[in-house]
Image (cartoon, rainbow, N blue to C red; front, top):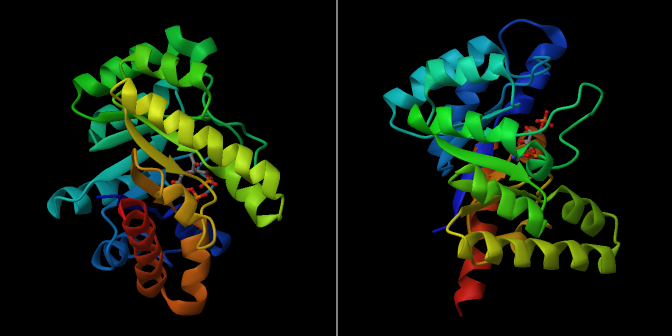
Amino acid sequence: MLRLGVNIDHVATVRNARGGLYPDPVRAAREALAAGADGITAHLREDRRHISDADIDALAVVLRDEDRPLNLEMAVTQEMLDIALHHRPHAVCLVPEKREERTTEGGLDVVGGHNWIAPFVGQLKAAGSRVSLFIGADPLQIEAAHRTGAQVVELHTGAFCDAARDGHEAEAAEHLAALTAGAALAADLGLEVHAGHGIDYETVKPVAAIPQIMELNIGHFLIGEAIFVGLGPAIARMRALMDEARAGEAA
Ligand SMILES: CC(=O)[C@@H](O)[C@H](O)COP(=O)(O)O
Ligand SMILES: NCC(=O)COP(=O)(O)O
């Protein structure tokens, strides 16, 4: 079963454009779960450009009460570690952050940062969270992620999605081949494999067809699509495309 995590960051982006209380990311989380999401992902950025501390406080309570998983995305900093250890979410995904980036541009450098990242992984695991590292589909990064003790890797699909959307077929095929090989390697090492970033209706099927992938995290496109069709129908269509891709893979 391929799970769908819905990332609600950009509900908060719209709210923050005016300040105030709406649209409410917690309401979006409830609607996403009702529409077929298996869990909720939220990225508490260090600059708080979208999701706020109060959003995480509220999401942690609501999702715990409803027994649904929260996947907290965060930078590898002491401030974020303290927040995660306070909430002990179901899952924590460690991601790279740059102040000037518009969105997450690449994966964590686990090869170069192993000695810094591994203690974070250990503390989060000891607190009961499943720990995921957001990385590119590079064999060296996957092997290094395994050495940190993380249980999960989330493979960055952004380069594949950008190339596919721009009609650069050969480049998209190369990125997809790397994702396919990376997922197989990670699974062979015993890691659970997730994928996400930049996925839309056009790009979801090739990614969902990679058999080792257990979870997709999708946000920006779904929140944008919700403007036109509503959040529930947008999620239902994404879910159906994921299921079609998996059925095609099994056939
Ligand atoms: C880590 C990742 O790929 C996204 O989940 C992340 O949330 C992107 O950051 P923004 O939501 O700020 O674009
Ligand atoms: N980790 C990826 C994620 O949560 C969603 O990314 P996007 O769909 O908002 O690009």
